[in-house]
Length: 396
Image (tube, rainbow, N blue to C red; front, top):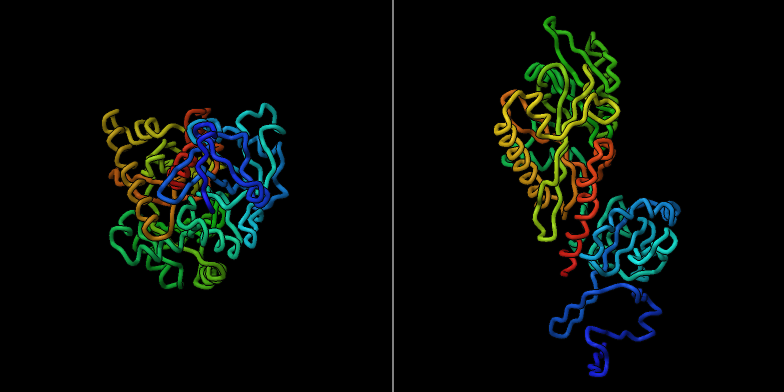
């Protein structure tokens, strides 16, 4: 476009032609930043948060549940809009959604409907249909936070190529055959079978072998099945082969309760990975998983380490730092292998020798545990930091 310098215009003001506004107008009631670089003028930041799968889920009432995410809007500025995965219109390079109006005092004035240009950066919380997503990244490039939803099996495949990456995880393989399963049970005494795309502990089994060489299979509801002969194991194997499953060495718990840690790891406005906080999850006795439904206690990480690992404050602090170091390390590795990330929850377990192991990297995670702990500071940090990172990705 031809740029005209008008000395009579107020300072820090830019005027846009009406025909451009008709195509995809920028709301005029928002504060923007402007970057001038040689012959390029960039107005923004323009950030899209893809928070829903279907636009039918969007309403001012539903959107208002997200308002805590915008509590630090003054440090971000610009146009931040919320949309659904099916709001992308590739042939027009536009996205339908609702933008956040910082001056709004009610749900109806806080969220304003519009048709917006493709953003400078995207904060993706849900999967997007492949053709729309491919078009979006062809325009936005690598400025999509949590760009690829990799599976547990993808981690295994990547770990097979690299010793450093492998060292973060307990021994893990893709489920293949009955001989492999028996060999790993014999080797480790206890293993987990997990669906590659599972969540909330669904489809997870723990397999153990007792002193009488009997194989036992325990599901998430604590139902135990004794595998009496080869045919019973083969029946389960057929189910596990229908979808991709992994088999992983079980880390022996401290005492008689499973204990793991959820570490919240994000990129900040300097585009650096930081650990924002950690909670400890103590499972009900005999339960094989630590999802909220099956948890006996939720405590802050430091307290959990001191209480259950029976160490003093300094040793607990050292172990915390080791957990954080491992989490940041594995996050840097997934950046190298899968895409652009900036908001994950890493599930960690610590063995009796205080070795730290990564169990899972969650690209989409819930906040119920933090709400239950009434940790409003951590919740606000987790909600707002992705926009700091998005602004930095956008070049502002």
